[in-house]
Figure (cartoon, rainbow, N blue to C red):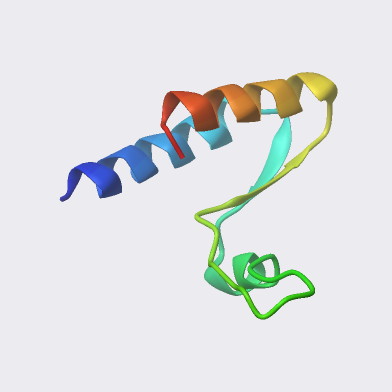
Length: 68
């Protein structure tokens, strides 16, 4: 397992364990969030749908901590 893969796995575990949020990891559902109104597209590792301001803050903290 690569370092990037291990970090991604740990980030997903942290997101699902620590947040008051829906954490979407299904590739099909994540692909719905992969584009905006441009031609640019990138598949997200996960999509977080927070239920509180605290969940938004913690999501940003985890993303910073895992350098994503």
